[in-house]
Amino acid sequence: MEKPTAVDLSGIRSILASSQESKNKGLSIVAGTQRRHQFPYIETQRRVADGAIGKIVSASCHWMQGQLWYRAQKPGWTGAGSHGDHIVEQHVHNLDVIHWFTGEMLESASGAGGRLRRVTGNQYDFFEVDYSFPSGVKLHSRCRQINGCHNDVSEMVVGTKGYTNCLDTIYDLDGNVSWVYEGPRPRAYVQEHTDLVTAIRSEKPINEARQVAESTLTTIMGRISAYTGKKVSREEILQMDLRLGPSEYELGPLASDPVPIPGAPAGPPKPV
Image (cartoon, rainbow, N blue to C red; front, top):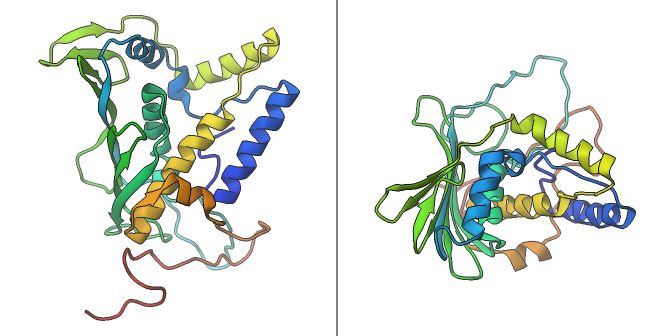
């Protein structure tokens, strides 16, 4: 199963149901959130869970990069598809790491975003979202796809005794390195498949469908907050009857909504 598992609430509900059905049948599902199969991440997370940085008090995560490739549509081409914007399609990796390290699901989002440079589709160029956990811990989240800018793909979790880059290093509160991962580093993209095959052969199922669906739900929550300009709670999101795209997917003319305008009523923008 590849991330993101869905772009809307109907998709999330479908994945959660499939996850439970798979568990009932003893089947294995591995998701494309490969950091959970990356040895340095795994060992760092284990140490954080054992108290290496104390009680977690805040976190941040970033996926800042240039614009992805695209193909301009030529006359006669048709197509249909939806990927939920890059906060869902790409930033889900970082948010999944934060869920993993904190052991909590984010409960609300207050976001912003916009479109400056993109020449295709109706998605944003950047998002910035403040998330809150039930415990009161705050997460600052940023993602961007604009060429010619500073890039940063990273996560950080801060505790009462220190902090970590989540990848392979733990620091004390003065910024001194207290531990560095020095073990093997097999390719995570290969390791996730190795773990899946091992689970099948050993008849010890692993099922990552729910955790990646939960992380995808968090990205959708951030997207909706940025699109609307409103603070959105997890409880509100779960009550939404949200479905993007057609009821049946087939090649043909693709209807596309306009670029979202936060705080604006439905319809074309009015002069101010």
